[in-house]
Length: 62
Image (cartoon, rainbow, N blue to C red; front, top):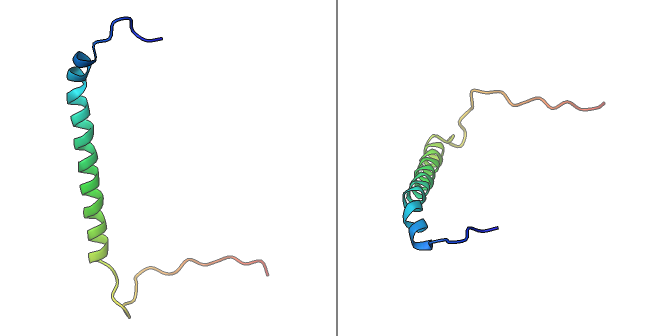
């Protein structure tokens, strides 16, 4: 069921700040994610470099 008298222009003006806020949050999250990926790639291991953590052991049947 819809409202009997819907003014689309009025509703779009009322929702504009919320839509802009959602767009801003999406852009902010994308920038954070790309920064995170750039940081991971900058700190990557060089070939021949050893890691500080041990490899996980795999349990086998037998």
